[in-house]
Amino acid sequence: MIDRTKIIRALNTTVLQPEVYVESEIDSTNLYAKRLLQDGLETDAVVIAERQISGSGRSNRTWHSPLGGLYMSIVLQNRKGSLISPLYSFVLAISAADVLERMTSLVIDLKWPNDLHISGKKIGGILSELVTDDPERPAIILGIGINLNEDISGFPDELQNVATSILTETGKTVEYELVVSEIINSIDTWLIRDPDLELVINEYRSKCTSIGKHVSVHLGQTSFTGTVLDVVEQGSLLVRDTSGREVLISAGEVFHLEGG
Ligand code: BTN
Image (cartoon, rainbow, N blue to C red):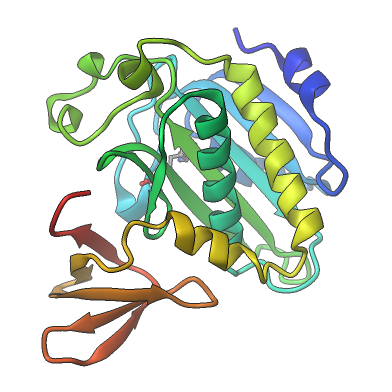
């Protein structure tokens, strides 16, 4: 069972003062977070579950959520400025990558927008959702799934070659509660250091392996290939297509066409 007290004891935050909810099995931590907001949650919050029955990923995919993985949603509200910014997801991605790198000897890369990769294999992903039920008080839910202490050999066939986990990579487990509290501490440090999210883009660029890659971009029914030139200030991907046209991508799926 996840030790909530251990998580709370290891928190060392100033800006983030979240309520922490720990569940053994729920549908999805993002859905749980939405229900908290509907029920009038006024603070920031963190929702963690040992497993999810209907974990969701980007583009309406499901997120395989067995015991051993980390499933967490962070609710941010009452923030000045625009909560719509994808830069909040970048803060989470950078924080999670940093924490995992510090706790293991692994190198974690980011694939645009928010996939955590080890040598081209996915170890984590982020689903961020904006909740505007009360337009006066928008909230953002940052949901992250990390393949932590589960062996990939137990994953479905279609994930065997594209996913990995900390246990699979290192042969060792990491302390779940410490990963959770360190990610929250790291987000807090970012929000203190960079409250207007002006610096985060540079840190993101330094970890983002999509830049310079030859990619296939899928936008609904259309797709094209091109080269990633940059990730711009607000988080969109700047791609030059094969005819030389430069296109800004803010949603959609991007596949690296060579290594990683
Ligand atoms: C992706 O497609 O890469 C994003 C995956 C996000 C999964 C996490 S697990 C915790 C949170 N709850 C969900 O249902 N999804 C996110």
